[in-house]
Length: 334
Image (cartoon, rainbow, N blue to C red; front, side, top):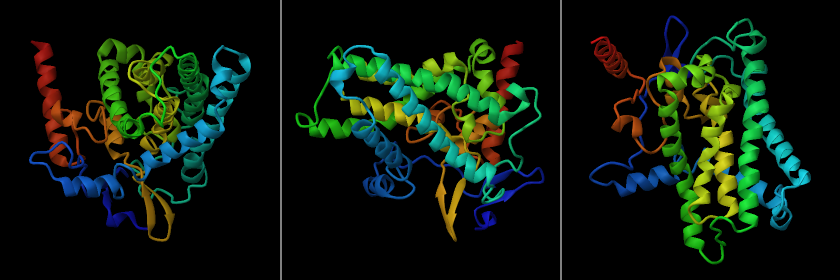
């Protein structure tokens, strides 16, 4: 599959899609119901591919790899360690699949790769000077345990009915609507947390660790400071407030834990066959890693557009961003 049909590569080896990033036709006026439906059920769209993938995994985890609710009414090492191991294996398989195919086998070379360079193995910015090793240490040493800690406490609270608990049979419509809203709840939460940790004092002490990955790969997605992990996975606390089911909480954590893999994969598309490829929808976040001061969120809700930090990948957007940063610097000097 030839990426030249979809974008251009500059002299430094940076590939840019021809089509600029666009938000889906949801928050527009006048409403466009047919376009919304086409986007909702289409490909790529709201359901396919990634929200369906994360939901399917969450269903599998809940029905086959989550201890019975009765056993989680008290904290016991057995079920807690089971969840920790289950989450670690899930991350290893999901993130590892992207890394194996694209970065070890290099099955498509640099086709659709935003930055033609490969992860650094000789940079003092990373633990052991190796970007992938560094990223995996933060992922398994901090992200997975903190993810699991939130899950353990939330499931324990559900099992003891300390937080609002609903059943599918009693509220089927609400149950489904909440499942569909979880990706949007995640977007708002991520945007708020992300803007917070870009505040200079927090950026220098916390978020800078993640932004060492200027040329991100899949393992960069959860390579964060532990404080950032605490903030990032705190989205599950919404289920401590609104009526929910344990499946909703597991879907929220699964979405939060796994979405960073395709979001940081470093490729616009993963080629899966002759003339066939899966969109990663990662260009907007790649631009955030490249330029730091744009695209703090991504997805359905145009938060960056509303707050003036949207970069669609075009030269015009680049000029607007540079002008915005120049004016901000001038304001600080006064």
